[in-house]
Length: 203
Ligand code: GRF
Image 1 (cartoon, rainbow, N blue to C red):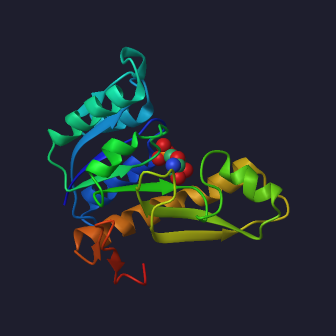
Image 2: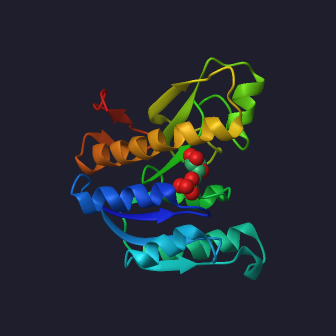
């Protein structure tokens, strides 16, 4: 499955994809890694793995729409079948999202539909939730609101804080993202946003 990955930060999810690919457990061809943060660790991980990188700075663009148009033009050059948002911290213009409907997924650190947006770990703690987790979902124009493909969940412990929760969740996120992409690579899931179905009940 030819994919591109968009990331803004640490890139541990990207690293999980690279490692799974190298271990032969995930049949992906990572054609490129694109970022809005030229100095981020994710880009360094990609370079270390010999993957093509593209870094675009939003400050070089007049507005969000023109940045996103350029970003997606650069994505198109890689001809991916799937675009993976893995810690990509920018809201995307609805026009570009609509243009690749059903070909883009995101990993979000909450049990969606709970807590779209930022500070998800703290919000789960503040709400007194017993469970927390992460979701992989299809990207639609509304932030963090597209159909969920699968979720990983953990129990919140009484002494948890946002950092401990995030740290405990992270390895499950890596597994979840790899498992969801494997479903897509193996044609067990069809992402068209108006015709969505999944036969991968058990990850
Ligand atoms: C992950 O927690 C992911 O769910 C969220 O941002 C974080 C990215 O981590 N969208 P990393 O950059 O992949 O290490």
